[in-house]
Length: 132
Image 1 (cartoon, rainbow, N blue to C red):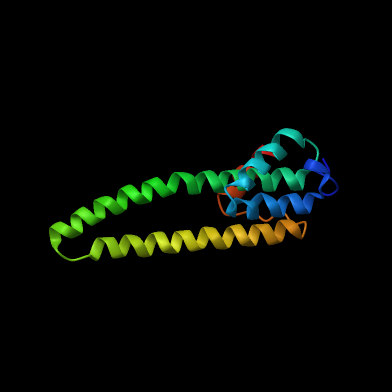
Image 2 (spheres, rainbow, N blue to C red):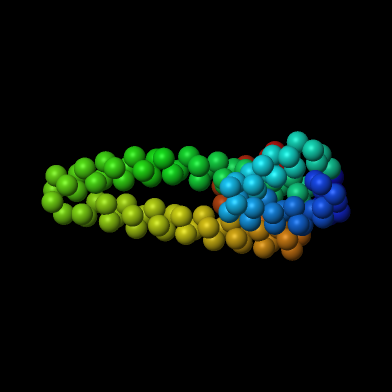
């Protein structure tokens, strides 16, 4: 398996690694590119690693949003019963920190991927490495 060279759609592997993350900001196009890369490119280790890591990160975000909404709704109900918005503010702070952390990891992984490095996001990176 090579780490550099051409990958999906005859693009350089480092460009594919960058787009797997950044294209998610446009209607989850990064998820689509990542899936296509995993299916088509069997030889390029860099592109496949970042494609798998992007898929896992995006799926995690898609799963966390409904959970956050349900917990926020329950927190709002508890706050209205107490009359003080303590739980909602705490949940908002926790979700904000998690969301900011995931955003930073996504940008950092995109930059490192464009530089040709296989940067591992904690937990997700080890899982992605198993599938490469």
